[in-house]
Length: 311
Ligand SMILES: C[S@@+](CC[C@H](N)C(=O)[O-])C[C@H]1O[C@@H](n2cnc3c(N)ncnc32)[C@H](O)[C@@H]1O
Image (cartoon, rainbow, N blue to C red; front, side, top):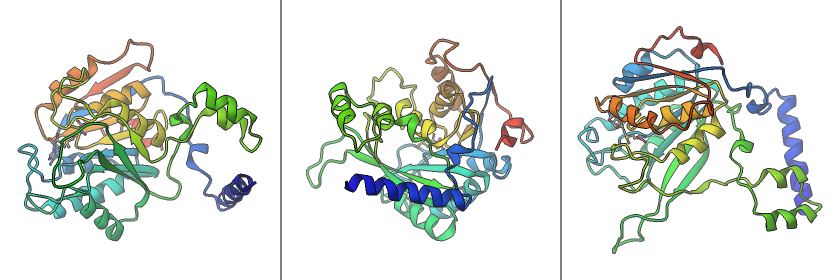
């Protein structure tokens, strides 16, 4: 019976939200895939890219910043926190009221070269922004470096912030199916709703997904390329089809590829020349045409483009 009262409390709070006009935003954004998607990919500094994007026009920002740990020449800044404060403020400005920001990082990166790490960015956002932490997601991977002086690290954190309490969230898009035996058992449990049993389980905030190893087929050459499966879960759950996904530290252009496949528009920029070559390699990995809407790619950003006025 405790499950039922739990559910009633959930329903009561949903009803209260509806009364207050804060119904879950996935009830109010269209779910129809667009006829065609538009993608901007350009070599540019993150601050310049953000400055060109209209207020409140972006549904989801995937942000995987440098953390000053000297992984590459772009990963070593003296003014890390002051710099991060600038792109974080701009990120908040461009997000729609239903928008989401996901910030990749690791609490263990205590800025060997300076003051940057996820913890300092989270503290900064708590004090200096209106963004609200919704989940701290633990990305758990099965393999990694060995260690003798501490427990070998097998996870990174992904902090998910909502722009307002009306943030978009489509849980059904990322539920994990139950296996047949579990489904058969749950179907007999009258405390459980049959439609939820068919839809599958909430994947929780601990995601077990492998990192890309050195010779993974989807690797395009970027040293910190994230797996498409990880980006896909974020895109599906935190953005509606036909809305804009932004990545101003685009690296391997994996967000462009996933946005094309998932029927979202995208804007991706990176300061390095290598972006164009990585994009080409990502596009070569797209599944056959017809499994996603046709797409167009440009290297110039027009703030008056209709993709920015959809929200
Ligand atoms: C951690 S990597 C992002 C990797 C990406 N998420 C992926 O999966 O491929 C950070 C990226 O930020 C870029 N970067 C560093 N400083 C930048 C700046 N000022 N403006 C734009 N991009 C910058 C780097 O070139 C690097 O590709």
